[in-house]
Image 1 (cartoon, rainbow, N blue to C red):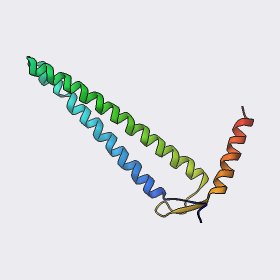
Image 2: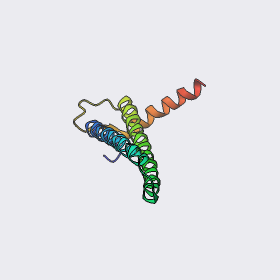
Image 3: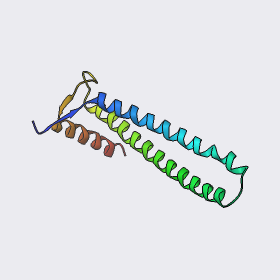
Image 4: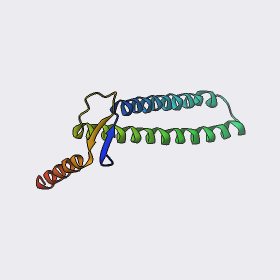
Amino acid sequence: MKQDIKVNYGQLDGLLDSISFYISSVNELADAVKAIDSLLARSSGEAVTALSEVKQRIIDLIDKYGEQLKELYSLIDCYVFDMTAEIQPLSRAFMTRADSYQIKSSINSVSSAAVINR
């Protein structure tokens, strides 16, 4: 039916593992680029100054991409957590189907409880 939602938690878990791997790789890359500091400190000249500026731009980009990956991981992780509360999978390796009206009803009841508890 078009009103059904299908979720494969195993695929989402695999995606989280991949993002976690990328975050680790970005951190290692940042450490490697920062390790160049000791080499640049022992040298001088226009080329060294230019390399230092390029290195800093690279570190800024790496930090930016690392933050984006962390945000993406957090979004997907929260989605999986919230959806698991609404749709309990029989097996994380297979598609889990739920009626979207059931989910909407659950979300509305949670929202109503949040308003009442304020």
